[in-house]
Amino acid sequence: MSEPISYAQTDAPVSRRNTWSLRLSLLVSDRGALAGIIIIAFIVLVALLAPWIAVDPTEQSITQAFAPPSMTHWFGTDEFGRDVLSRVIYGTRPALYVGILSVFVSILLGMPLGILAGYRGGWIDTVVSGFVDIMLSFPSLLLALMVVTLVGSSMGVLVLAIGIAHVPIFIRLARSSTLIIRELDYVTASRSFGGRQFHILLRHIFPNAVGPLIVMATLSIAGAIREEAALSFLGLGIQPPEPSWGNLIRDGVITILDAPWLALIPGLCLTLAVLAFNLVGDSVRDILDPRDLSASALKKGK
Image (tube, rainbow, N blue to C red):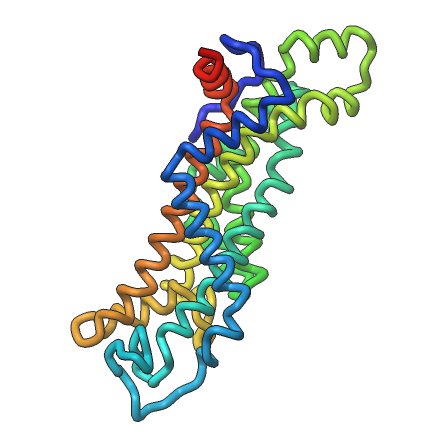
């Protein structure tokens, strides 16, 4: 887990006016982040344009079953003669949908609980921390698997299951950030001057705690995409004939020796998507770290 970012004093002050320009400079100078952004933008564009750039992914042609890659079918066909390229293109939709929305659910549930536990302490902190410890004792994929098994398999259930599985991470991160921020001078001053708790939480705690959560959200999207593919691979996620990278890989593994493209191509797409979000998340972590901003400001001033 990433260490919470402290927005306390840094070695060199950075003015608010120059903060975003420095962050943009850090992003532009990071080739890995740029590569990740390009890949993510391409995947999003493909998902949006799927109806116009791909044929029906469920259309079958038994006479063309297991056709190798060609000019007619760039990625070949599967055992039912369905175009693999079209199925891979439509597979981007559940990956992005589940990946992004599940992380939104995790933040929506985890951030308020973490901030409340960190700021109020006492029995609230004890109960929330105990709940987090229990949930973290299970792997996130296992938690999602339990929810899907009990409730059933659908797109909405996948979002909820993966989102709940990631909630403890955001609770713990929000709590640890709040424990640091609440002891800073400006928060203590606001409290001593009679500031209301809701005002302090909204004005001081939340804006400063959101930075580390953005970093974790970017990294968690990659994990959520991977878990959606894993559940679909196990037959508990997106159900055929609807395409998902996970069920495409599962179907391709059966014929990996005779038609390797059926598993390798969706597997490569899944790997690139996860790698892209991880690259961007690592860069965002550096950009939101005030120490890196201060170091950049010093370099620019020389």
